[in-house]
Amino acid sequence: MELGAFSVSLSVKDIKKSKAFYEELGFQTLGGDLAQNWLIMKNGSTVIGLFQGMFEKNILTFNPGWNQNAENLDSFTDIRDLQKHLKEQGVKILTEADESSEGPASFTIEDPDGNPILVDQHR
Image (cartoon, rainbow, N blue to C red; front, side, top):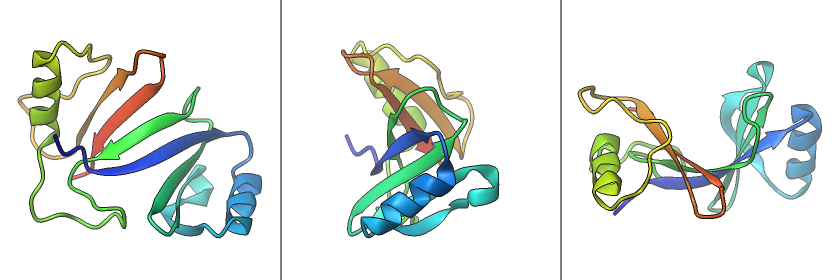
């Protein structure tokens, strides 16, 4: 099962301080909008998202259809197919993608320790 590009979405208290901190660690802004309190940052193949006031907890994030540079892949497994497969495996889906839709969608699950996992397709 190919889940797409992986990143960790961090719930931060002050996005400007967090941005400066991660820049000191060698991360560079890959995308996002500081004015909207979210940024995607990258160091080598490591991608993190900084989100102020959007999530309660840190989230493991997968993006079907993207590589680690947020570039579109020619071929990928659609999010609705991933969701269907996980349901068939008995994984509890917390928020579901509309299986009758096409294009952008997302769903969330939790691992056995309660860590949230977001699968978020942008195209």
